[in-house]
Length: 186
Figure 1 (cartoon, rainbow, N blue to C red):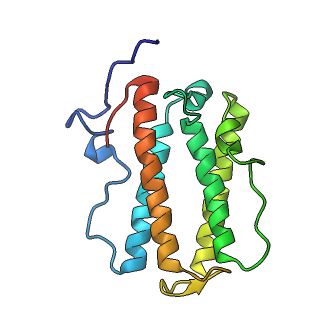
Figure 2: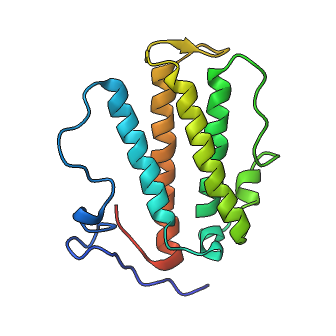
């Protein structure tokens, strides 16, 4: 068994924080958003930012490292998985044929997360593109009570599910990152 990395944080203020509050891009001054949709969007943005922060500063090998065997989960796999999930959510919104999987077969998102900078770069591009396309598709449906797609899912349910998916995987990212280099924090 390999030696565990020493725990550390970049925060000089609080030992359980990822970064000092003034350096944390998730911290915003002022009041929270007004309204349900802006609040949901704000939470989604926060979790998306958190995921990126958990991956910052790592090389391709570290991002692809499966830190908790026998799991195939890695930080790079999470990036790829969330790109795949964003694409799948558009299938819930639309009425047409489902979009093809980004990474081919089931679990291709995790299985194909290999230590190659080209794979890392592609994962970030895929995630940004799929997030933007899903955001645009949902922007056409600003009424949270509207039912969309073949199954008639409420836009509200889809938004909450997106937040839940990112929140759950940010928890995984916390543990994966700590296993990779010992960095801890919210």
